[in-house]
Image (cartoon, rainbow, N blue to C red):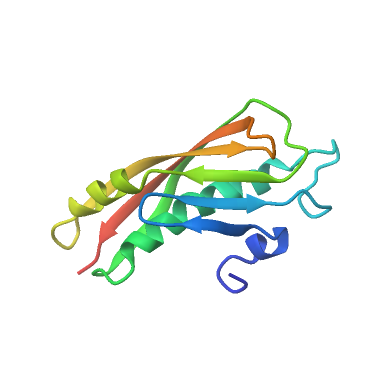
Length: 139
């Protein structure tokens, strides 16, 4: 992570669970992730959400033919102030698998809008995120 995603390392975001169906990341509430309003800075929330969806993508692409992937859109809706440790959960593994199966020949492109839910330590939803990934099968 240090060389590929240094901000994730700086913020101390960790992958708690990663499997074929989903991924969960944990974002601690520390001086590194705090904004001047004593809540979690929105950019760190976005990073944790992107990692939850992106790690799932990378897991599904491991050992397969060569693909490129890129975030093409990102949406966030915040519903509660994040003042403690936040969990980001993406459970779009089955949808991701269906999307990747459509990449049959080199040059094929598919996009997938992946849902990520952010919750606080009490299980309350603090925000919903949509990360759109574009996948291209390389030659």
